[in-house]
Image (cartoon, rainbow, N blue to C red; front, side):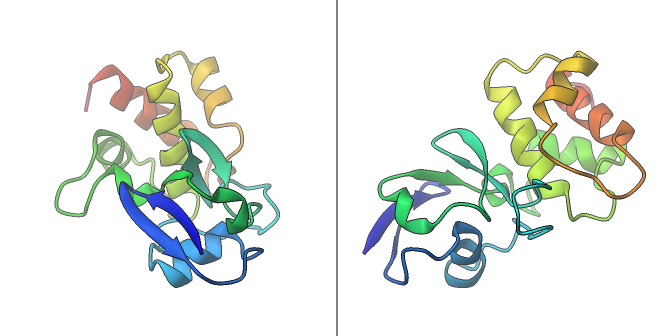
Length: 152
């Protein structure tokens, strides 16, 4: 039995310890916000926070996470009450096709918690592990900057 905290709730997983965290979140815990983009840790669509650090959940076997604190994109808000970053993505066009959005939001939240500079270079560095396949990063960067600066 693997015990962990997911979005502030104590959870247990009794399956195979080598199952990817991404699959446990989506299939066993029914948290489908994290997306599988590449399955190889290259795109960041599956990013979650593990003990506060952004990590590609497609690379982590759940068996390594006994006692860990996991936060998914679902922890940032609900459809009824969006968080600041989610609102900014909606209002500034940061959510394009939606595949990269969960990972971008999670990476942006980690950046925010670390003091979150709104300078373009700092934002690019904070989001560097997340790939967008749509039109680019302009609206994503503007969304994060707006959320961090308190502008909407």
